[in-house]
Image: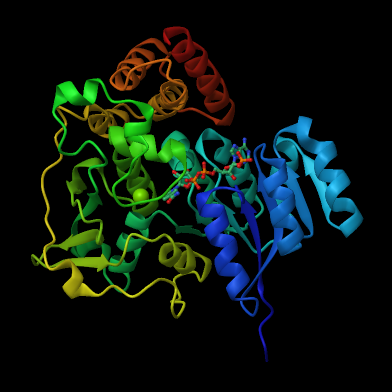
Length: 385
Ligand code: NDP
Ligand code: MG
């Protein structure tokens, strides 16, 4: 019997991960069909993509853009909706089998929770969801049929390395980091870095927010937190190493001394396809790696002196509660202000540190506590800019 294509909701369809996901779906109509597409505010791009991919429903988070979406798509028989609630309703529809969370920042939390509660599988790109509320999300998953498949390349690599292995044989997870554009820069030079310097990532082409997070190494701190909640390891069992070539996507070390790694070109197509396929390999998902072109692969310890954001992972995990939610909110504000040219590069860390020391600690936050913490931390961080 021929299996029907899997119905996919792409939340953040207009972004870097979203458009690459749509390209994979487009090349494999026998496997996948887009039924829901959602974006933040770029309504023209969403309309263009919806005209091509013909989902059943298109959603725009920014309600002021709704009329343009409706007028363009309803004549084509595509349903339209707007707002955060519409996003949450969209992922729960009967014609959705898997949700790709490719939205950026805190905005991923509510739709991911809705998807888990309605038992949908998730291809998780939006790491901020696990940073903000990892413990809460883990407890929801225990009560749901929903499965999370990592899209982040490091976590996809770890997931691939853990296949067929017993948890008790694993000693540690080794997450690789490119080191970002300032890996070789002196502290004085980093202090004067501009947004255009920070946006020049040496290996990966990604959205602006994650590119700045890579430059501060906050992205690696977030990935340590993400790995804890995805794979159930403690902070001292997860190590970050700098690997400037971005060929080894991450590693797992075992108790017998063996280390397994997954290698590939810096291309998100493979991890996205692996998540869409729930761990099944898609032939030709990315360009093959010619290993002799990368005869030298190097590894070095990260420098927490020049990149203090990295240490925030262990601080957040040691404190627990709503700490990582505060860090995420302050980081989102600081990154936006840095991109707008309003603050310096090193102010990003200072704003996060100050916000973390000011916002009330909540040991066992529920969903409403995350909403309140996120709002308070944003207001406080903005007041510092
Ligand atoms: P982009 O900035 O390229 O895209 C973000 C997407 O989210 C856009 O479609 C945007 O819509 C949408 N969006 C923004 N705000 C909202 C909102 N309030 N509600 C709904 N949708 C919203 O980001 P990336 O694709 O780079 O990153 C997406 C996620 O994937 C992030 O969490 C990132 O950390 C993670 N990730 C990304 C990687 C990459 O290679 N890019 C690698 C690993 C992880 P609009 O265009 O309308 O603004
Ligand atoms: Mg990553």
